[in-house]
Image 1 (cartoon, rainbow, N blue to C red):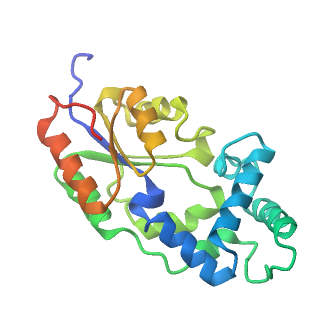
Image 2 (image 1 turned 120 degrees about the vertical axis):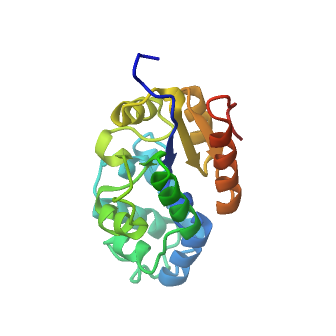
Length: 226
């Protein structure tokens, strides 16, 4: 470590499924609103990803197409699979419909604020979408405490790409070994560890907060978390 650099940790929070409500809950709500079965909707997302030779959400999370083109492609897949399904309730402005009524995971948000106010730097590292920022960013309402925000659609990489972890550490001005990621996906946690980070796999807010507290209490004598 260079002279003058601190060994203090930098805690990164994922958005979807960590700062947001559980993803299964959100998909279920979308089915209730639009009438599109969750399994069919996820299949359409995967098919559109495959059209680009990429994982399911990667094309829109990397801004390779805009929101309206993405939902139009989803509708095309759904019509091919279920020709009689009424798609009139599925709006082209997907983000506005998807985020309507969503609330931040208050336990995680409060913890992020607590960390920041106690002197631990915090950031958001998210796979997200250009058109969705006006909805999710005010929803989490953390701009006043964030030291960094890295969004896949703006940087051209997405978790679990190794490049996004290197970029995030550089943007925060910290060594990779100082970064702690809180994420709900196993592949993202594994990729973070491969990049030299510590990772806490989110299952519930209370579990994740407790594990991060444990990591921070042992800092810098820590091991990679679950």
